Length: 518
Image (cartoon, rainbow, N blue to C red; front, side, top):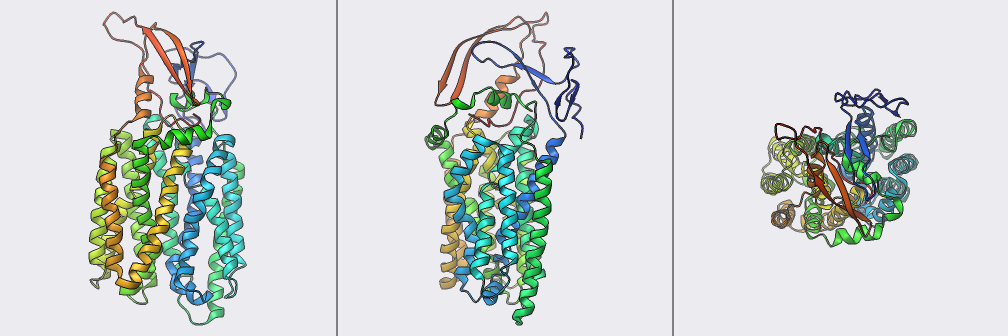
């Protein structure tokens, strides 16, 4: 693939060609000054077309992993019958994804900061592929623990996947597309959940013949293994660590910081002391935890009111996620256009609460078409919230690593997901689906209030706005460079010489994307 036309300098996807640098005004490759305490070098930024291939490849393997999360839960009644296990054991085939994430996210985030995106992508695909092939061997009623082992390996792969969209978007994409790119990364995960809702009920019908049921389950496992193996090969061949020329000035700043000046533990401590971000961590966990609980228990809720409707239960799950995918893309485009992070997040959160209440009170009316409509409304806002939380988190925590901030957000979601799934499951068994869904609605109300209390400090946007200022014949003298726990701040004084009409003739768009290394 070739470059975007925005890079007028003679470059390839693999980096700059040798030769003289064109300093003509028509050169659209951005050049800015990054004060580094000692000199004022020009820095180029460039967008590569291959960034879209990288993001879609990530979305593909994220899809296959998310599919595995829900493939048991949506046919939980069939899984219980085949493996002869209780409902709680079947639920743990989904909850193992949540439980595994919590202890492993911190070492994986450290590995991301030390080794980079390609190593993380390879590890994710090795584990993802291995998990699917282990499950191929588990299609027998006496091998429940083998299928749980395969699911655990796939759950471990999720740790290398779930928090990557914001990091990948910042490393590869420009200022005005970073939120959209993040939405595309989340889009792949949501599409995988959608397919996980749709395909298993079709591939595995509710049969009484154990041998025939084993045949259908094995077919489902073989399809998963074949697809993950193919994507693994593509990742080995195509997935790149980062573009040779950074896409934004924020990324250029990130690359200028020596690795030995970064402290992972210091970064974690700074995030834990960041009050607006910690409010977001809890409110994000409440919202996404509710989504995890609804997804895991959807089959049980639908079958309670609509017996023998396993296929429609899957279609309702599909409706939730497809609507959420549309919501995610719309929210990403809206953020790129308006940068109204807190306002958008708060409105979507409030509408998620309203959608949950409507779904709760209409589930038992006896009309499946009503459930489809209300579930779609719920999904549009609740699932559409996912990229909003990621991007708002990056804004609140710049210049910290996006992998670290996303990891904390997802860790919160997994913890609340386990609590809500266990809690709602028991409430449904004892008092019914309405009480279970009102249980979740109460926590969404708490999350809405917490979101309203978040102080909106858009640090990344402030950095990009400062970078957009391009003086003409400006002299910028950096008089102090201060390192604070691995974070570099520059203090500059500038003397400006204006053009004859009183305005600066310097141009150019600013940088964007989160800081990936400080």
